[in-house]
Length: 249
Image (tube, rainbow, N blue to C red):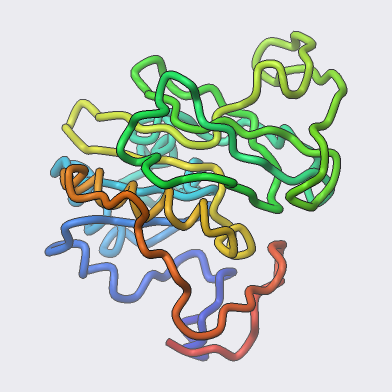
């Protein structure tokens, strides 16, 4: 927040410290509908256009909503251009149906999935259709409730894109994929990754392994990456205005 100096996700037009991207090796991002001024947006645009790697979490598919003032309005399509998909819709029922990660059989031996198991998040599955050049690593099974041991949901739902009716878990929507862009960026995207999701060890390992891969260090991914949480971690529930107030960097 430009007035108080507090961490405020509702401040969409200010990202202090973004100049660190100028010398960064990797960008790990979780953004939603940002509207940064050109002088800040330039650092992000230059990073992406330089072909540097990106690890993008959840709402990063719709990271920007730049106004008519912006010289970087093309980044309103950042999800499609770089990640391979943008915001489409919720697929599971938001705040009622959690997500179980199911490894894509053809990707089972991919180094990002090394040591990854029992992926769960209490956020819902997004409706997504990653670009044809994407490699799907994980699909999201919509659950009947909000607990890891809840059974799969069984009902039909119409797809936003073509109006066709399908079983909600047949096929399951992708929740993690990789691709390489025309500018050579190595990109990993997961539509999981809210603060509460990160309580899950399997998801943390997936993201850490993805960072290795994005940097071209996949041969160094151990059989089971250490993803222990340092200190206490008690995230507030996801939702608008659900963040803890009065926190400063």
